Length: 366
Picture 1 (cartoon, rainbow, N blue to C red):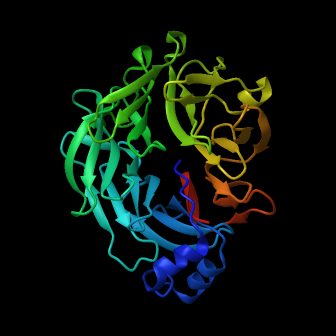
Picture 2: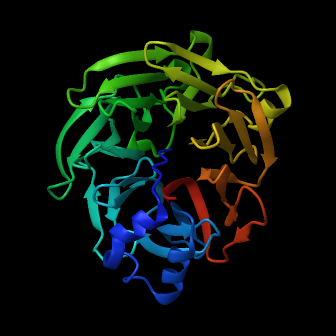
């Protein structure tokens, strides 16, 4: 997940009337007293869907209804707008501001494409990149949208793989890292996985201006059912990635790896008990630059694992029911669960009687 960090006072000063004054009194108090603000998609307990802005204490600052289930969120620090993407095979993304003062705008997928749930802004905020599926040709694409012109779709380029999921802007500002999960899908078959025997996941680095492939990494052929899905950069610029194994449940492949362009691409071994606890599924990855750690979550395994970014050693492993969303908070990680809990690094969790939280969480304010 992307973890842009901003000083709270700078954020509130810049947002000013467009944020704080637009909030209801209770939400205004929460925002001004909070050390951090987070965004996450949710499912309401009455069956609806939406996206929420929360404090690290789990207090709701703002929410927006969505037409269907959301997945991940990306934030543009230039315009201070966010985009929430529909869960695959979704056909919409919604642009919104965090106070609800501006009307949200919907970005529809074009004919022959659907979104995979993730996107990223260019450094200057002028372009939005989104992972998409060219489902008739079974190839991954990056859709390019002009954020200065109503998010008009202005182009696309291939991901050089199948089933792209998360993409991230690399520290150089010029390259996109793309996790090609390797799984073929088609909207006529819902979320059915159509090519498990022939999966070919990859991690690809692409020039964001030309679409040219700069570097590509594939797993050992024996691990071709290990779908690369989610990623984050640590403070040293190393890309950490998490995988989901589509092979037999009795197999226990490594699920977490790291890469640096031109230097390395490797999977990290975990102690047997920790690896087994992930149940072959990493649902989210987040780095904490201040602490020098990386966290991975598994809603299937009810597990949150934190590792040292330098050597990959496990720092902690925690049992949390249906945990998936994670974001850096102070020297630890804030986590959200499918049971409606917001779990801080220390202290008691908060519960929400109206919402259950979806797969990802984004920190947009420090």
